[in-house]
Image (cartoon, rainbow, N blue to C red; front, side):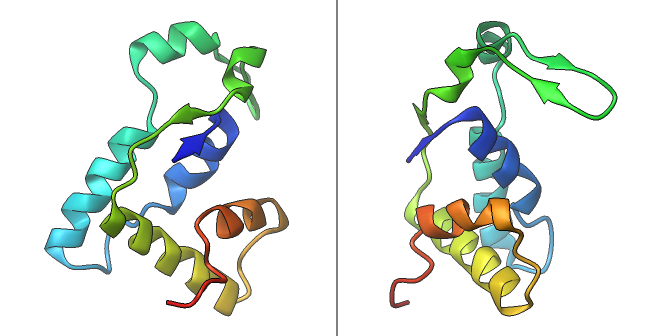
Length: 106
């Protein structure tokens, strides 16, 4: 799946840390690692963090391929669908809902 820096940052806190099976927790842990940033990416994107903001250079706006396996995809669909159902999905997260095809039949 192709994701840019902003999408990765928005997805990271949504990856479940509990409430799923042990097997799915391992998948979620792997997804969390995939979404995180390597030292090379940190240098490439030139992150600058202030008290309430994180900025990066324009290179980070280009999507890169992030391996999201089929089970990880379903886990994230479940999270995003639950947020929509609970009416906790925020406007800027709708793009993630669409990206993961949450409107498609299960």
